[in-house]
Length: 206
Image 1: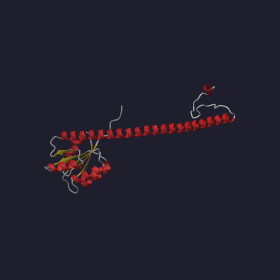
Image 2: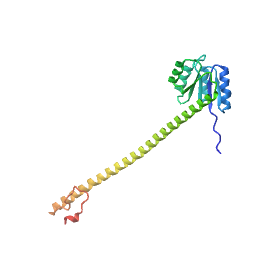
Image 3: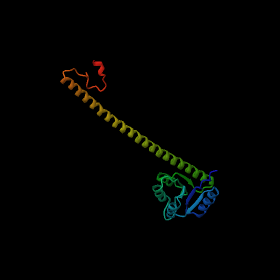
Image 4: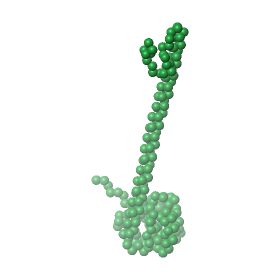
């Protein structure tokens, strides 16, 4: 029996302690490993240390707001799902966050924490599919490169063989011409009626 997979890591960047604790307690019950930061700057530093699978980001925070956190994390790790948890009440803030690279958003207060679990699972599944597609593309590119290299090798080998054959053909033609010249010096007719042809049966000339 294969061992259970490692628990998924969730980073919660939220300045409101009750919200942060509520998320942590719920997510730990769902068997996630949870990391917490109370402001954007600490969140970025914690992200670099723990490398979470998904990040929950509040928009309004001290030190560094959610939009600034988004910009830095998207630039640093574009394949990590980033979910906005917004309590600003301004749809424009959420739209801006989505434009900056947020994968999804939830509006506070999150009264049904199952919605949080659903958003995380959906984001993780999307991330898995993206990773699988990228791996498929990389494997396909590698296969194409290998096949192309193999075919190029065969082309080069056939080219070398053709060059060798062409050299032999030229040598045969030259020898046939020399034989015909010798026959001419002896007052005989040519042995080869078509010396420029490589394949010719001399018996047909008798």
